[in-house]
Structure formats: C-alpha cells, structure tokens
Image (cartoon, rainbow, N blue to C red; front, side, top):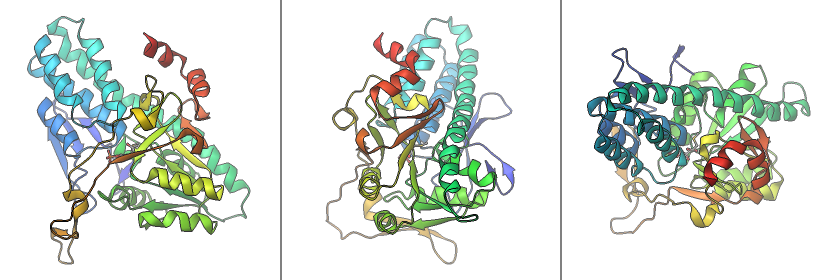
Length: 369
Ligand code: MRU
C-alpha cells in the first residue's frame, strides 16, 4: 500500500540480493524507519522484539531468516540452528511454524551448495503468495461490505470495527482484515473504520490508524472498551479482525480483547468476521481454547505507555503504581460459535471443520501425514 503516495511493502529484499529490509514497526506512527536484517539472528531478534509483527509477516520474516542463515552457512547444523532460533521467537502465530516447516522440508534434501539460492527463492515466493492471498481475501470480503452498503441509503457509510493491526503492516501487503476495507474504499463505497486502540502495545492506535490515514480511509480510534457501546447503538455494521491461528474446528486466536468484541457482536446481532490466509490455519489443532499457546509478554508493556511529547520527544511513562503486579496475556481465543464467517482466499467459510476441510483438502491431507 502507499506511504506518502509511494507504494511500499512491509518487507523486501535489497538490491544486493541478500539483505532483507523491513519497516521498524516499533517506531511508528511517529517515525518511519527501515531496518536492515543481514543475519538470521537479526531476523529472529526482529520478530522477538516486534520490529516486525503480525502473523503473516512473522512467517515471511522467518523464511528470509532461514535464507540468511543458509547464505552464511548451508550445513545441516546451520539449518537446524536457524530453525531452532526462529521457532522460539513468538509462540502463538502459527504462520511462523508453517513458514519454517516449508523452508526446512525444501532445504533438507538439497545439497548444501544449492540451499542458499533455493531458500531465497522460496522466501520470496512466500512473500509474493501472501500478497496474492490477501488480495483474494479482499475480493471475498468486499462483497460482504457491498451487501451491507446496498441496504443503506445512498452515501450512508458502512461502519467496520477492527481490533489490533491486521493491516498491510501485519502482512507483506494489503493486510487481511484491511484488504476488503481498502478495496471498498477504492471502489468508492463510503466506509468508516472504528479502530480499537489495542492496549497494551496499541497496534490499532499506532499502526492501523497510521495505515488507514495514509490511504485516506475515514477512521476513528476508540479505547478498547468502546465497541460494545457502539454496537448497542447501531454504530457498527460488521466486525472484521485478523487472526494468529485458527484451529481445524474454527476457533480463532487473535490479539487479546478480540473475544470480548465477539461476545458484544453476538449479543447485538452484529456480524463478526475473521479474515485469514490459509497458512494461519492449524489443521493439527482441534480445540483452540485448550491447545493454542498464549504468549505472555513483559510487565512493562502494561505498566508503561510510550508516546510523543508536544516538542517531539518519544518518552515512556509509568502508569501503574510501583509494586503492583500486572498480567500481560497477548492473545485470546474466540470460540467458533461466535464467528459469523472466515474470510479466506478461497471464499467466506463457516467456522467449522467441514467447511475448512472442504475448502483446503490438501492441507487436511498434509496434516494427517
Ligand atoms: O502481537 P502482534 O502485534 O503480532 O499481534 C497481531 C495480531 O493479533 C493480528 O491481528 C494477527 O496477527 C493477524 S495479522 C494479519
């Protein structure tokens, strides 16, 4: 998508053919900084520190991390080391494991001399595929928005609520939850997005709002607790969120607070959609609530807030009394029964095993091997 009128992706390969560049998302929205990742260790640290974040982008970065490792040393030992270093960076987004398995199963049988080239090609393919997939999600999702728009008076806006950042920054381009929004906006449908701020790291306030602003999509940032009130007053037509992992039975793991939005949507008869690329489906999982590992992050993310002062300095201030313990669960699971539909590259599916299996038979077969 565009930043200051210039098309840019969240991650790309530099002209030297081996260094990986990525937007440093920790610096947004106040500073646009590009980071160079020249080693597998740098790629792993970028994922761990959330320089890059969002399930599909984590997967693409990990794939490039394997390529960087193969460039430095293409031995079996290096392959294993790279896999181990990358897999532990973030526990919840299944795209990380998916991408690493793709890379390992491709590289393992190859002679060492062929591994670096093959790794860079496959990593580039994973990144390109993500763009195509998200465009596909957009095409299916925009039909949902158009159906709602068709029931409104001419010019009346469609209000979408979203949580966290499932935008182009969280993917390679387009985003998952935002792809239908960008397409609807570009097609001239009046659309407005309620952006949950998404404490504690504020991916909504700092990233989704920044993205939408640069693309000219009307939006309003709201405190996380506001969605239920808006839904009770008919101010939300549909919810579209992203996800870090969907189990085969249709349970959806996403940024903490998603479950509460799903409950409020259910209570108010507001459609609750989840946009996801197929690498986010974990066909080996059957029960999201019991099986998905939920990342617990550092206390400082909850106990402090970081922002820009009036004179332009970035400062972090403490908002919790010294000594008060805090908890920082990064994700929660929304049970399939609360999900109206899963917007995938192969269409809008019911959130259940039969629908997912029918749409992705090859993935079911691979999971059974
Ligand atoms: O902790 P984050 O910022 O990596 O969490 C991101 C999310 O929860 C996104 O909604 C999810 O990865 C979907 S991204 C298309």
